[in-house]
Image 1 (spheres, rainbow, N blue to C red):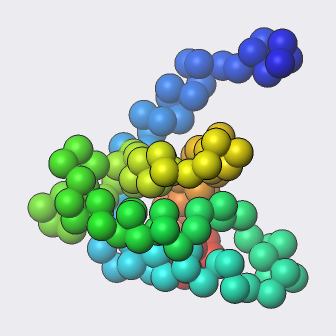
Image 2 (image 1 turned 180 degrees about the horizontal axis):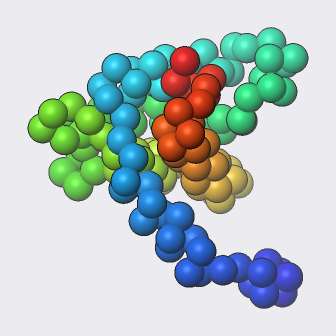
Length: 131
């Protein structure tokens, strides 16, 4: 616990979270992401090992889809895009109904997924969740 607290860099995390607002997904990319998220749990293990883990289940993905259109604070923009900050918040918001034993892991996983998407958008490189 002490190591965790000692190594935590609040400034770095704040910078990472702020950078999420600089990148956005089109509605088509969001739809692809949702489809891939739904497919993830059914992938063969050898394929799962090659892509970043997704710890969110069907219930959370449904909540994210609903909130993409209806969330007052983090929904899509008028032009149908969603920035990664809002997407990250949709993922963490969907996690609120999780059991305590998965809550923290899923919260970390939401950050990892947003970082993966940011990297793909920034570097214009491939990402399984967007391809």
